[in-house]
Image (cartoon, rainbow, N blue to C red; front, side):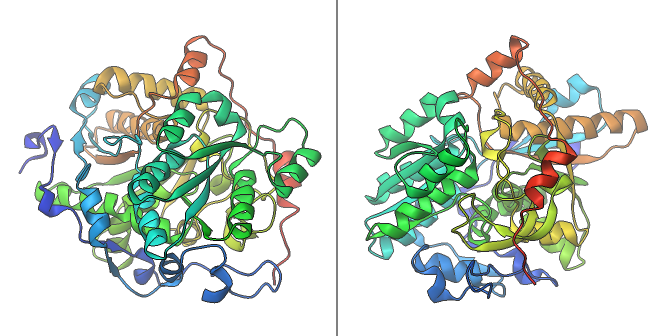
Length: 457
């Protein structure tokens, strides 16, 4: 079928929802480096991780060999509430740009959480319930992950304790209230509720917080409260595994209509949506079956891929979590309070970091005013108000389409629209009022935090 004959929205049948998650690590020649113990600096074993994570999630975290992992039936049945999600041919955006490029986006906002985060939240809640736990703790930035996890915990009857990055807690009160509606407790981080939170506030009075801070607090509470475990919405191998449902559906929709992407674009904070979107395409690339240009887009205010160091670092600001080898700005780096709260993490997924280090994907960073220009343009063309995080991918998709306009190349661009921005109106207001600023850390500022990376032989 000609690209011009592709439906505006490509919907798969319910029977085409993937029955298994795809584990890209199984096809990687260079596997991601293992998590290591912060005390011994030795690779973590299953028993080392049991006080923090659910048992089955640990098995998935450590499994670098199994290519496909079956989706449990209760998780699959939950997926049917909102999956398959549409792959949309952005015809109106193409027309407005007057580009020969063909643009498609995979829209993950058609669920109450408003984002892709539910794909992993329901899986992690299921495994916690199966283990007989009372509840889970977590962190959240802009609130999409916390919202998704609160929904999943309500579904399985689990308690949910969320530490929300303070700047987002204040900027996005309605997302906080959605979490509370689903029964979660929500605490602004850093807080006085934990020893680590008190220490961070002592060292950084008035700090607006970071995902690294919130992770530290959530882990402290999980490991000190019987019947609880910690769950994470990004970064970890297990999360990228669950999010592969995005890419598997995208690949199936493309195959159904003979679409061959040239460029695949996703926003990148910790790596969950990007890793999920690109998974099957990267698998083909790793196996030598096809080639794609894959672009990770991150905020210029928190540029871990483009300006970070590939090294072992703590996953949290309190330095109590395991160390991961990743592109990092240093666990002590506190990003500027930009409005893409879900991308304000100092490091990047170990899996994606290894793929980037091996030259299998590229990365770019963009300032937030340019991001919101793209978000507004997209909203006016396609009728969806995008989340600030997703809008990073939109920005670069538009830029790539305009390059095609200059060269006359008829490329096919696919990007991930990870969620909606209806709770981000404070950010849109600041953009419209001309009060939004671009903060880009200096080399000297980054050098300070990177210089404090742990020494690992």
